[in-house]
Length: 126
Image (cartoon, rainbow, N blue to C red):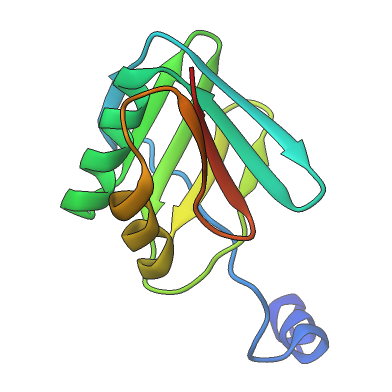
């Protein structure tokens, strides 16, 4: 039994998938970008250009990086829920499953406000 087989036997077939950043995805520079945690909730703080870029990512269902030096966040449409991951060198990888993408398109506006999209993701537009 190899290492991966041993891990699968411990976690089972329903183990959570981890989000994975893609180096080749387009990078969108925004004026402001921060990520904070509050328990299991990720709070992405951005400006109106970041909110507009997030809406485009959700609408196109294509991955993209949002960046404001030194912060980088990778948003990727995912077919099912995945666990967000923070890589100290690459930044955050935040999955957008179908329900989260729908909530993002329905509620997020490019105007100041706080938008809770799911139990694990909120966007604050300043």
